[in-house]
Structure formats: structure tokens, C-alpha cells
Image (cartoon, rainbow, N blue to C red; front, side, top):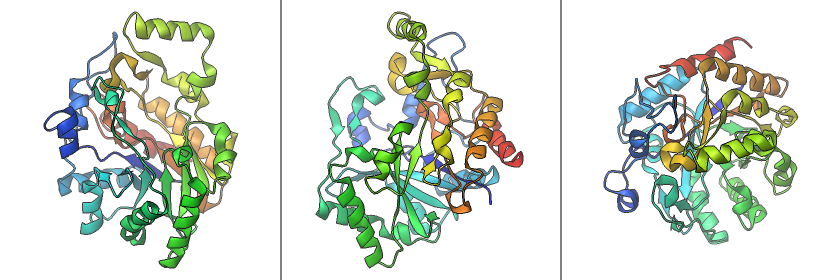
Length: 358
């Protein structure tokens, strides 16, 4: 069995009233993508979509095309970002709800709870205040949350691990009563005929794996995207980056090939750790010169990175050979697999070639 690649999927490609109010009428992720400007010579901005164009996720045909493309190149499932802010408040739920109700596309999926407040500064609004706060309402709200998602958990397309629906939590340490939340959902799952929930904690810190497992999570998704910045940068490089950001207004950047040297570790070989593959990163469409930028990513370098991560999971049991792809369509983070005008389907072909080389 090949490793199952689960790709993060951003639903913010359709307008909603809240974004209209905060950012202006018609705002979607494409707004940031389209207005992006290069910050230094050779900086690839704006990044322009190719095959799928500037799509709207309210269109069923778009969702079908995405799924067909993902399947063709070896992506096993989409992991939709799910926004539940407490007190039954959801945002950006329409694309996933339509996938669930319609039964189309017939392509596996799972959910990742993006449990964080929304800050306007990440989309160009000059305020440090939250536009909407993430809250935790305790047992009653956890129950409402579970039953809101129960139809998805029961869907035959939903990704399961050890017979249990896969559910990721973006910021596990932010939940004040994390263990109680997990225990209660497990209880509700059994009451409703499920074997349980396969809870996965998301973290950027590989040294936090055991701490997160102790809270009751079944596995940990480790993202080493910023590990090079955290432990690999020399003092000189840190000074240069500060000059680039504050004096030259070039943004914080590093070479993709340097960052990818830290993209895999011994933890990835554990049954309860799911590593991450990253095609590229450029946050400047959202945050300008304050955004982290990787330079020099190519499909060839990405293929090498994928092959390394696939080797790290190859000795696990089939059920736990899981790799998280960050991401399918995070265009305003320069973090996407969908074709663009510069590379075409190059990153998709690199993923498929990495599979074929196993």
C-alpha cells in the first residue's frame, strides 16, 4: 500500500458576508493573490493560476475538476479546513457542506479544525484586534460541534484510520480542557455507532510530540516548515534577514533547499507521527514584507523532499503510512499544488514521480 497523502484544502474561494464587512465587497483569497507584488528581483509575484483559473468554490464543476486532478497525481484525500468558533458559529462551510450533501465529488475527505481567532492583519487590515474570536464553550458546545459533524463522519468517503474518522486540531494546546474535549467526543462517537475518533494534533514543534500525545491525541502531524528558521539559522543569517525585512523591505526569506534539509526527522518513523510535505511558502500576498518567503523552490527539489518523507514512513503499518500535504490550494501563502502559469503541473508531476520511484 502506498502512503496516503492528505492535502490541506482551503475553502476561502467564495465570498461571505463577514469577509465583505471586514475586507470589502467580494473579498476572497484571490483578492490577496491578485494584488501581490514582488518584493525583490526574481520574486515570483503575483502567482497566476493556470488550468483551473480564478475559480469560485460555489461551482460544483470546479470541485469536481480539483478532485479529478488530485486523484490523477496521487493525492488520496482533501483535508478541508473547518472553522468552528464556538457557540455554533461556523464560517466558510458552504463548499464542504455542498460536497457532503451532493455526494460529489466521489473523492475521500476529512476535516481539520482551524481553531484560531481571525486577525485582520493577516489580510492587510491594519488592526491587531481579532475580527472573530475562537472560543471554547465547554461540554455543551463540544456536543453541538460533534453533532454538526456527525453526518460527515458517517459518510463513506470520510478518511478513517484504524476504523475511526480522522480529525485534526490545528492548535491543540489552545483548547483549555483538551483531554475532556477528546474524551467526550470519543464517548459521543461510541454512542452513535462509530469506533471512536482518530484525533490528530497539528504542531510546528517536533519536540512536542509526546506532550501532545499525553493529552489524548492518537497521533501528531509534525510540520517542519519553520524548523530551519528556529534551529538552523546562523547569527549572521538572522541579521541579514532583519535587514531584508526592515531596511530593504524584502520580507523574511530563506532558500527552499536549505529549509528542506530540516523537513524530516526520526520522529517521522513513529507510527503515531504523520510528517508533512511542502511545495513552497510565500506569505507576502497576505502580509507583505512581514511575511516569511522561501526562495528557489522547483518541482525537482520538491520531488526530492517528497521522496525523503516517503522513505521515512515506508516501514510503518499500512494504516499509519500517512503524509500531510501542505497544501492543495493555499494560494496567498504561495503554498499550493494546483497548476500556475510558471510551473504548470510541475509540482503535481513531481509528486507522482516520487510515488513511482518508491
